[in-house]
Figure 1 (cartoon, rainbow, N blue to C red):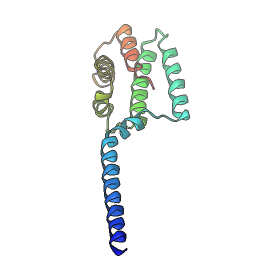
Figure 2: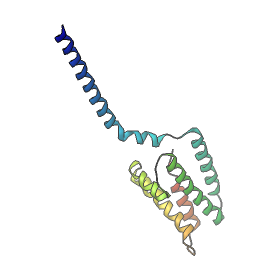
Figure 3: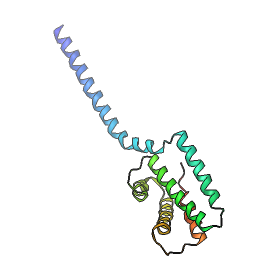
Figure 4: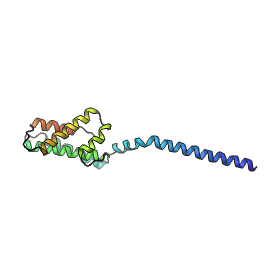
Length: 148
């Protein structure tokens, strides 16, 4: 009887060890995908904020006033920064967050977002540079390509 009890204990221990190994393997396999799911989740209030800002920016794009168009470009860049941050991409600057997001975006979308951000930087940091209304509008539209 003692031999049978020992054999059952050994089987129980073996079962616990095998189950633990499978749980650890499952955890390791699913670990890389947990960050992706987090990055796709936005709260209802975040979505509402993004939608209202997009509408405001798109209204400013209808203007012929160069200052309102620059403002729209700057606001679109801020919205890109906000959206990337809320989706879980870390970095101090928009460029840092955009680089981290690159693997999760199509190459075309990434390139257009990057071009829009570069135009915004020119408009803000390079004094004396003339950016046309069309360039401002195009850059702003590129920055609005990121959907939530």
